Length: 422
Image 1 (cartoon, helix red, strand yellow):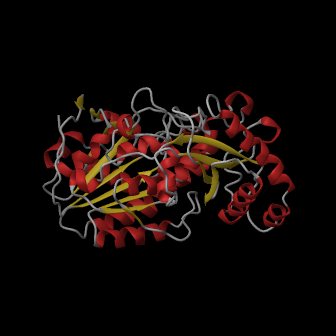
Image 2 (cartoon, rainbow, N blue to C red; image 1 turned 90 degrees about the horizontal axis):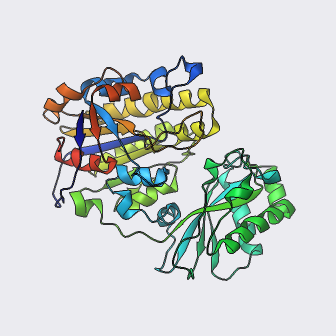
Image 3 (cartoon, rainbow, N blue to C red; image 1 turned 60 degrees about the horizontal axis):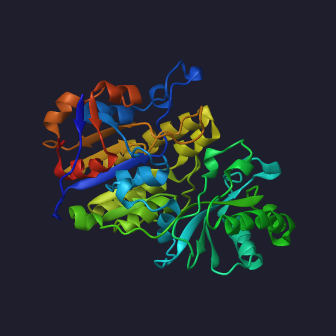
């Protein structure tokens, strides 16, 4: 097995090559009895990703460093080319960056999920994928009725929102738990802990009464999708300090996603966001709109990072059929059309991978290694393709090549250099 570790400091450079990263969030999985003992990637028909596996290089990589939580924040930081052990400060500040929320050096941002946790159980961390229009009304009602010095509420997309604590008075960050990690469990054991926890718990507790008694929310629920019951605060942190991808690799580009986190990491990395109407972060997302944005972004940039959230959401649901659909849609409506677009350029590299596994059985993220595939124009990785191609794109197919990239944060440098490094 070839193990690759990167420790070389890269210098800024000019590069005319086109780079595309296609990220199927949470696609990786464990074998499932109902799928004949196969994973979702093994079972689903994915001819386009299989093409990349056969005609590119395929292997496994670890996107979450040992000892760190396997969140989409840490995992995606890796894929953007940043070692989470060095750069990660918390999920919420990355999302706040995308929402153009200014954070001072003494401010802390927290992720604010609108959830359904009635009777003390985390029933649904998405509030039935609440409509953003209902979300805005809920968050505004909380802002009007919760008066705590320094606390500010900011509505986001669907259930994903931000609370900022200005002039946070503590050195450490209040301990919290992601709500998607405790589905069907009693919430009492997972409430915020440590310094500042009393403030966060008060916000969470007070939100229940405000939401249930608000006439504005009651009327909005008759119009818009959603089942809000309270809020859950987690993922706190301060604004990170990161060098840009232009400074690291001489790259400029765009992010395409329904998720503030991806755009936030992108902005911190010096990338711009491409907005797509109808991008929901679920099975009904606007795939065709994302592909049009990809084509547009490549015309005047080096790099486009296109992210699809649906496989991850389906994994959290524990819904096999939804995850199969999400993976098939990712292959047919994203990977296939993206290949047709990128092949029009003389020199290109395409990376396809998940950020982390979101196994159906577990319904949350794990830190296990994930399969990646790199497809490129002629002359790039040609020798490596002979050694590390796979018959199909799956966990088993990637393991079979014997290629293991120790740090997922090395993949960006591997792409820029156009060769595997040791």
